[in-house]
Length: 401
Image (cartoon, rainbow, N blue to C red):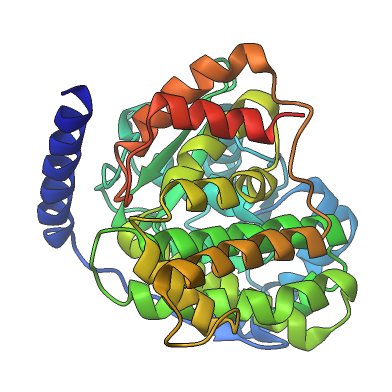
């Protein structure tokens, strides 16, 4: 009876979500692609004559010169800029406050995020806080950031989160260790540059984890039960590109073709989840990432095959389609067989890019609390099968060393 009631509640929630998102205003978005696209984006921003641009990044990117290279077009055009490089992995409300203080002190009216998902998410929240007196804690949930924001632009330096193509952000509460999602149409960057030349120096382990993050986004969007927009087409592009290019990008970071393929894959994965949200992999990953500081892409990679196995029967037709898409099977084979082949291909890809199947950071004594939080979060996603306690605990045991 309890499971039946949860399913009814989940269906009602999704029905309400469909109605609410149908009333949200649309957002325009531009993507510049290819080598040198970061300069094109900067020229685009300069042409808008901003008063001052706040460049949001992190200290390693500044020290390596990557952020300055990405922003060169702005600096050469004489656009006044201020810098905030205090973003750390899994940004907190305190980091948002620090960036907001710089924005106000320097009187900035535009933001440019240069970095990975943490940087882009932090920039989105700085922008949201700049035009509202409300607490960002009041915006937790889908579509609750409803006011106008300062314009945000993005130059991703990793190929994974796809935050440059989404209207959401993930923030961590430093006290509770909880990671939460905030979203609203104004949080979608006005434009982004997918400049793979900025990713050439990305270490292999980060290439691997962010690439698996992009794959997770695409798969969860594809097997979800919310039919909306171009999520199927976008997800298929992302899945195919990841299987084509991730291993090459991991093994040879200077392979520009592989880097470009992954940059585009991450972007399409982001656009897919921007339409229909994520799923149970993220519901669990947010808990272990917040609790132990496990990088988000790595957490997703640990969990992904287990969640796919858990919902394999419910998602069988879609998993079978993906197997054919990546060449893991042939059209006409039984769908059950193809679904197994796709999950096996995901496991093999994970192994090829050096990602382990367990983490010694995840402690058994925390499993019950982690499972409860994951189950609660998963209720808000359009998943093919809701998490239950026994299966979530089993997944946590399988990924714990």
